[in-house]
Image (cartoon, rainbow, N blue to C red):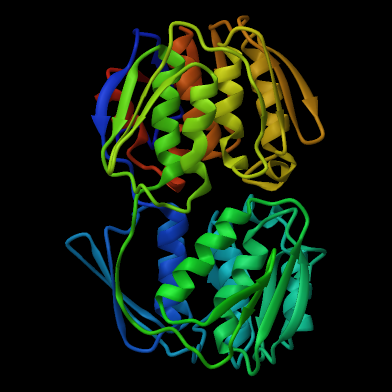
Length: 430
């Protein structure tokens, strides 16, 4: 385990351009989807190179609580599925994992007995109401706490047609789709509201690989055939595009160069297109069959960018905007107010502490670059994306301390060690 995960804070020194070649961690989004589908499948599935992080551990424990058996050996997980016959052994603790909380809440609808899905205190502030109401309309018994976890679900899914507002999270639609093959009759899901729809496409693509019959008769509408259950299979989990984006941000912020060697050229992960934003800010991007390289310029330039398709990149873009020439306008990121923390408010607060002029808007930020200063301690709000983005700012502007560095374990436990491998200077502080 990294020595930086259990300390109060770290200081990252601005030691010049960062350079190196690394493998990104495996995808959290695909690991957690595949774990749930393997748990629902009948038979034994094997996942090669799954992510090992706090979020993935939360999903592993969750599906075990629902009756699946998970074994680990030599970088592979073997999952003995339930065939959709879920028998919960107590409440499910989703820890801090939003995907686990929402996906397992939907899966719990297949249980004959009511299942309570809960988690750590910050998770209990993440919305779930639209999903709870949708499960009720599809025949399950479901209740939450004024639209937030804990959620109690069970009783089976009768199926039918549902319209769900995904503006707070595309995971609502993904959760319904993932369990729909086990409903008594076909399920049709209509999504409304702005969201990162590519994550729903990622879900549908995985479902089809595992044997589900999913049609898309119209834009943002999916019909899942009942009775076409998941078939156990072996699957290799591809890289995490969101984690790779944090590595590329380090290169962009410092005028360095980073190559990620395990990319997937045809990935559906929306954050893979972060490289387009980096190119617009002046970076040189080279995309090869299984590797992507990003080299930062001497000076980044400001952009106007809509992050509706990849809201998880708001922290990276805001940090790069802080060291760029000009004023960057970020829109389409309102959904991040309901992530691990209110990311827009947290970014505005912390970047202002670092001398950056930030105008907080309802759905984004306006960041004026060039004024960032050091001698400041930045809070991370237990948010892994803030911690990793602030590391890029600290690598470019000397004298920045980052609190609670261990929060990166949610998706990228080796982040600080990889930063050191790139030439970063990281030291622990009290």
